[in-house]
Each structure stands twice: as C-alpha cells, then as structure tokens.
Length: 193
Image (tube, rainbow, N blue to C red; front, side, top):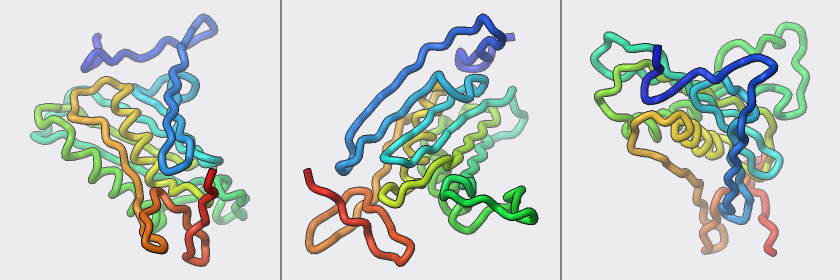
C-alpha cells in the first residue's frame, strides 16, 4: 500500500541505488552541512547534520494512520558516550535512561517542531536525534534542531517548516552566534578569519 504523503520505504538489497544530497551553509563562522541518502536509508527522512567535528544523526519515521484526535509526536535526543571519546564501564555500557541534558534538548526540539505540524495529520511521528561526535565549539542541541527540521523536510510531510535555530550570546558588547561552551562554563573563543 502507498505510504502517507508520498513516502515510500526505500528498496533494500544489493541492487539498490541512492542519490546523496548535500547542502552546506555558514552559520556564525562555522560551516554546517546537511547530508541525506547515505545513512539510515529505511527511515522516511534521515539527515546527518555536521558542524566542525560534531555529527548528529536525525531520523524521522511516520507510522500508519492513528485513531487519536491529535498528531502524536515523539522526539528523542540521545548522546552516545563515544561521542565524547568515552568507553563506558560494564554497568554503564547499555546507556539506559535519559540525562537531564538529553531531556531538555529533546524538549527544545519538540517545542520547535510541534507547532508547525498541521493539525489534520493523523499519523504517529517519531523524530530521533543521536549525537555521534561532539565538538566543544558547536552546541549539539542547536545542530539537532536544525537536523530534525531537515529530516522532516526530506520526508516530505505536510508541515509549516523548515526551522533553523541558533544560540546567541553577548560577549564584550558584541553578539556571538552559536558560542561553544567549555566544561568550566566559559565560552570557546572564536577565531576570526
């Protein structure tokens, strides 16, 4: 049967061919790249968002028709231990549960996307963002919001998007876009060039 909104499961097997689409833009002095068609090809929409050394995999899957009155949207943000160069010990190896930072990042993504979904969509929508590689100079939750928006756009669902997020901070009387955060709470100095 046909998938909603023109979505179709991509073919699998040795004869499959996919085209890779890449878009690059410069935001706050950092080059940000969105790429689709290489990874998570069975998702309805999948985008690898990259800025600096940070990589966030953003996927979107739409379910079959739901009987609920509103459009159920589930957003999940996960940070893998290997993204920070850590190898978890035995009892932490499964990485169960969400940390406070993951929960807040998931809520930020949800708050950016949910108002833009059309109210007549009667499908369950799941957006999953996974931090695969971290960079101290790039806020990963901002990259995840932008990547999730691109994944929804790639899936072709009817919504009022896309959205683009930035973090703005004031430093010495000047506004800085997407300042990186150091573990001690200070900001990473940007190179001018």
